[in-house]
Image (tube, rainbow, N blue to C red; front, top):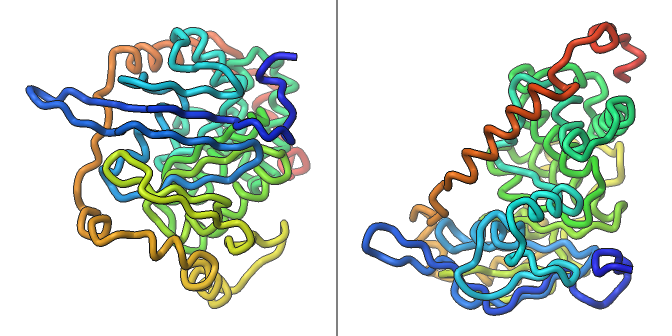
Length: 329
């Protein structure tokens, strides 16, 4: 049994971080985005990295996902040191064990919902018939059974994020990263999206890591890590008092949605509210320091375009063009 085959019930961390430091060079200055972070995240845990813009929370997520290399320190996922992996091994590792939900959705505009969801499976070499079946199932689960052939421009922001969630979970990865997943959504849709992700991660026994500046989102987590100036300033054990997702199919009125939102802030996570320091409140408008895009990122985009052009997703067949209402329900 490999390290990645450790059972979900183990007490060993899914992610273990030690002495993690990241320094960006901006002109003649060095900016310390992460400053010696130690952190353990366990299997099946829902974790929130909570902090204002510029706190280092997104940089920390990038380190955990292997999207950036640390200046110092280590990141182990089920015993695998990802900071030591080369780009090829990292890409394979992420493909097999990680899913991503983004604030800006990051859907490919020329692909339909079903093809966007099936994309990770296409990269994994799954047959067209199999990946389409899985993608359809996921889209039905997120309430988009009748939007499978719609492209991103034909969908609302909430619908696009549902597609993004379906894409992140379609391969049942061990870990799902969500970077400000509701930043562009209204209150009602925010609650729907959060409940969807929490329910799916619970049902699939997955680790969910959410990055946000919003204490209302943090209320859904088991554990909340407050990030200030590249450090963990405090840790909140939120088990037993977090916001409880509705059962699948249950609907709420607008007044009930608002009541739930207020309860999440005022009752479900009072310690999270208290954890916001005066420094946090006054630094919300500061720009967040992010890594400068590298040539590798541009190269990756070119490779994705090439893969799409040469894959079945870029082809048109009679089977793709003929759909029935029954097929999309």
